[in-house]
Amino acid sequence: MSYTQTIQEITVRYPDGVPGGIDVEDIAQLKIQNTYETHLDIAKAMATLMRQDMARYDADTSQFTQSLGCWSGFHAMQMMRAIKRQKGTLDRAYVYLSGWMVAGLRNSFGHLPDQSMHEKTAVTDLIDEIYTSLRQADEVDLNDLFAELKAAEGDVARKAVITKIDNFESYVRPIIADIDAGFGNVHATYLLAKELIKAGACCIQIENQVSDAKQCGHQDGKVTVPREDFIEKLRAVRMAFEELGVHDGVIVARTDSLGAGLTQKIPVSREAGDHAAEYTKWLDATPVETLTDLEEGDVAIRLGDQLVKPTRLPNGLYKFKPDTGEDRVVEDCIAALNDGGADLLWIETATPNVAQIAGMVNRIREEAPHAKLTYNNSPSFNWTLNLRKQVREDWIEQGKITADDYDEARLMSADFDDDPLGIEADARLQAFQTDIAREAGVFHNLITLPTFHMDALGMDRLSEGYYGDEKMLAYVREVQRAEIRGGVSAVKHQHEVGSDLGDTFKEMTGGDRALKAGGAHNTMNQFANVA
Image (cartoon, rainbow, N blue to C red; front, side, top):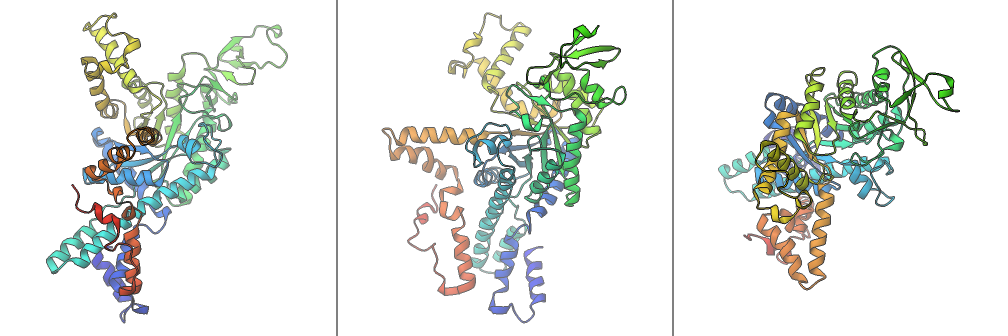
């Protein structure tokens, strides 16, 4: 409701005044500042918003969405504040919740690799924390607007402020939440998905690795599950959305098959061409002519018209044929969309190569024309090296340079930053997300671990100077002066965490008796009106 409608609703409910002599305008302020009643309401609203964004992208691929991975509510809040300050709107800006960062930074077992060893509840807790922080950012900004309203003189000035209140854009944005491989069996996946949704997740990303053997998508040793097993987990997530009334809930089906050469089990085929048969046809195997071709404990299966022995490792895992990853990816994606009811795909790749991803997507769209992707612009890629290699290879093919030009071993050198090759590589980096959205069907571009690396780099730079010769100059130059000149609101750290909210509420309840923090002796006043 608008400010005026809220005032009217309260007045109708309390025609003789609010009990306790509470001001109607104060109640209206608190109701408006509480931008969402529950986090389940957030999930419902953000799912609908995400569906609208998907429709916009279908009409115009330049309208792709983006997110950065955040491992705290504060990171998410500062990201959204920066976007709104620079662009004036949060349109098409999302939050990514990375299982890698939860494992690495947000669990009680210490810093862990991305192997689903962290507590399930850690993911739910982080979603809840992010939305708590974004809603508090709403409160802080709206409180400032209501302070402006109280200070406004005359109807024209008041109407101008009320218009700003009514048109306020919430900091709450969609979260794409990583549920890893589901943390257990299909029922465990369903139960955890419900908790993520109740915490506010409108979109859940799940991968086709074996839950108890899960690896980071950019490491070796990945083991995939049969397609029918993955489809059951996709159904489990959908059922969780439906049970909780989040009918627009979005599911991202991730395939790691491009870099996964192993499977834990051989599924049972019931008929030719079913999911099991299509999965097992890629097994690395040797023909079996007689029983002497089998050793004690060996497994043999029929593939087509031939009896074969799948290659099995000492740990019991089975190998896929080499160089079949792309074919398996295409089949994974078609099955996830057409039979699993997924909405978006995620293809984990080893390098950022637009042509490679576009080639797979074009094949997928032959069977699933509506296919759209979420793409991991991962810090696991050496972006500078990869893009410079791509430029070098293209220029050799085009005859611009020879194979003797640009020593590949030196391509990371800063010497190439201002070289034509480095400049071209940076131009491709700048255009990468736009290109992949246009050519490879990528609706959502994300960076999984930016805040992990940003914090590491920031603390490294600050610590080097502060504990070195620069002392306080290091902090002021690297942090405070940059905050002030960049217009970063967190430079007023007391205000950022709600000190003014507390003062306002004390005034609402106690009037002139309120003991406020924001008086003349508050050192935050030193940051008022600074350029």
